[in-house]
Length: 526
Image 1 (cartoon, one colour):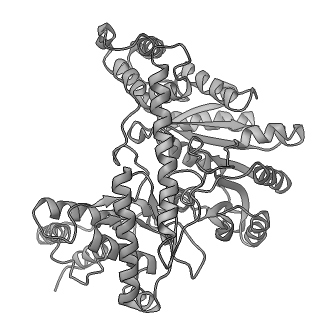
Image 2 (cartoon, one colour):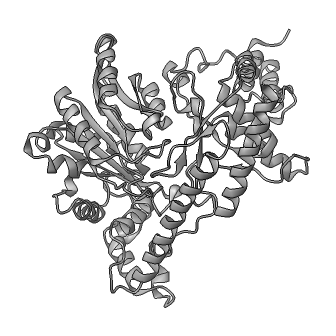
Image 3 (tube, helix red, strand yellow):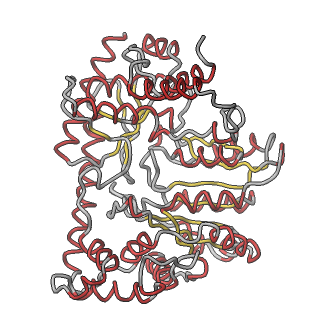
């Protein structure tokens, strides 16, 4: 009889890697490796484990992160199979599952990399190939580092001059509204500071447990973090029929329902939207701020795509700017944290993990606790802080690098705007696919029709219908997108999220293959 631990382990592999071509998983390299390891441990008489699925933190088992889930695991396996010469109906896997600009072929912004290189290897300061403004910026950053090396720890809140540059950037962006470096916390991308803030906010037990309102569809960081922290996720639905707009009536419905079983005190906003790509109007932001003030909610404004606005008539308005322009009734009372990152925008420097959080109207005593909390992790990556500083304090007119910097920045944003329009236009030509305008950010979240027979088959295999569709799409075309069920959606609707980041020629191929596959899929399962 097989050891129970072996059975459990193999079952977990099957759950994580459900293939829709109905072939057994028992012969896959991963299953064989883990199965052999488990059998060997059993034969060696390994004692009962301290850490098992039953004994581990139950909150972690609830964590799901769709953009790196089973679809992506299978995509990586397919890439390996292609490299080994296994014949497939396609010659490459096109990963459109995640907003990783450089992985999709975007070239780095020259000035960002020049300053980073100079900080990493100061000997290059003697090289005349580097422009003087890049050298000056690198020297300024190095002088603010311990031992004049970015290999040294920084202050837990981040390097002081970089926090000052962030505050000045915010002031310029918001038309002169003051920002203090004391309220700036540098972070490991935006994600780290978002989770840190949620840690501060979540408390209570039972009916007093903190509830957090998040948009549906949402970026899975939020649902994953709330699961990890044992908080109560409170869903409010964006209006797909109105370009994924935020409706205050829906916010109020979600809040009133939540108050029956938890203590909702946090409202999360993603603007521009991920995965939905909408850009909120100023009026919408004003309405949200009034709602937060009336209901005594802490606002979390995820604004990492603030540079990514493409649609005519749309503009980015920061929550802080609108808050302060609404006057002291709101600017003196509404508590808020806003977030930005070097991973998106025109930079796409995901791997450097640079970002910041600005807090507004935070209780000084709580702010001390926040500073204590971030100090536990010592400091955010100094390399990420360096890139963030270049974004916050870029070359100015007259500087040697200005023309090249602006040209590269505008080229990236112009290409993204063209690809946003191309994606919407192409997908809307396909029967059974409906795509709202990609007003901003880096993604499209089209709605797809899935035949009833396919829905039944998916349910029989324990899969969401759009997971079934996306896995079939991957196996037959090599296109990797993320099922909408991983982001949340209204019951009875089906979507997928795809990034618009691939180069235009590859994006056109992807979109045409996707259209053709959906048509074939619909015929096959109708």
